[in-house]
Length: 582
Image 1: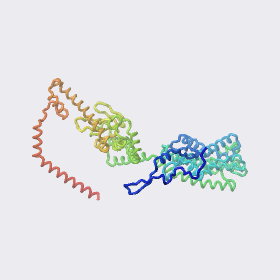
Image 2: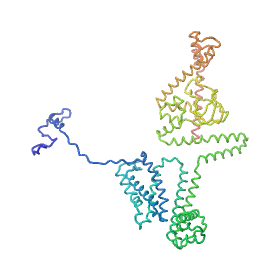
Image 3: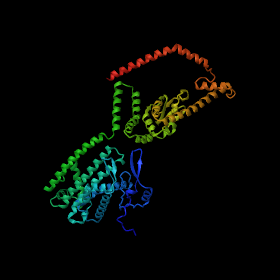
Image 4: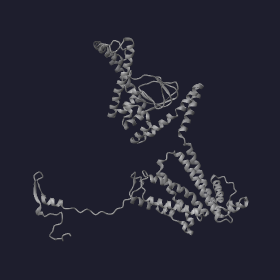
């Protein structure tokens, strides 16, 4: 039971002025009031009332980017919308709602529409102004209520329960706006070219429009048979009576008329018979003729750009044939050049892929470059352990080349990766995925393998020069340390191999290497590393110093004059280039 309130009692947290102690502040030249320790401790020790918590319901919104359920529902709802665009015009035109099977389908469609309306209140939407998804339930609900809610509610209303509103079921077609929203939301998941998507869109639009026009034209004769085009057609052609009395037959005839109207063929066997039919036919012909003209024009433009790579290649081949004919090249050379350009089609695509990758962000460039480099990078130790940023620079420096059969490839201190084709190097056959030239990082040319490569077929390779690798790792301390460590490792490995081969050859003529004196062994190793014969005489230190002095005394002036002349030549060339640029 709490104690009764006393008017003389101070409010909690307040103190009398006499309880405050004046304390001088020598630094500031002022005085301030200090709480007594006992009062402060009692004030702190008093229990604080916890704030009242309001009951708040937290709803989990669905993100179109991460929700797997929403992705599945979008696919299902697209099928539902496709069924609605086909079934609804048929049931309205030929009054199919009275059939039990049709009623079950209609109720299933209404349930799907209602469930989709509920999901709209919990589906995040993308805010283009802030470039992010809005996940606040109130913002989502307000946006939907002030947007498509009224139209979606009208499409979900059960019109089949009211006989007077049967024809309003055609309002369900307004729900097709959801198909556009779903396609925009899932366009990143589709990897089909825009040209092919445009063709598919045109075909879908033409098909559904023909279907809707056929339902409209068939509904006129189905509801008012006397004096209609259907009665005139039966009287002139005859045939099976079920073709004119059952809705599948009437719909088939109506589709035939819609296609003729769309394509402007017009055989003339189906013609309007009254004023109402003339008005409907005129509107249909005007609308479908305009649509047909637009679709034909758009499809011609799409087909012209459907395969841009093939168009560019054909243009290149036409230019090549013109060159060969103009220069009167022999037939064997013509065939060889055409074959080479046919094989180089992949190189053109590789260059275009690099341009696309260059438009990405650095992080995405790293991910894509890592995937494009392939498994061959695991065979090159100093590339496999580089940072992602450095790998992006390495991928940019890679150059694609194509070599003809029987062509020799010079190893000009570069790394080669076989992408396609077969070649032979030192008695070993290399195929796609193999690499050579990993020792390009060694500065001593004697330690690098100089084995020539001969192409056995058209060979497509990726090349990475040492100077380009140096430029990539120059900005990374980790990359420089890694390359330096591999330089030492490969240098020791290749030096030991070279020394062992030279010692084995020498032992065949001179005897055991282990029995030689230490000075002789040292001289053999140095000769091998310098590229001399193992037992050649090494120049003494005195000879080297005399040679250096002679060089300094006799040739130093000549070298200086040569450098000066070369500098002047370079400066004049630079000035010439600048003048040409201006």
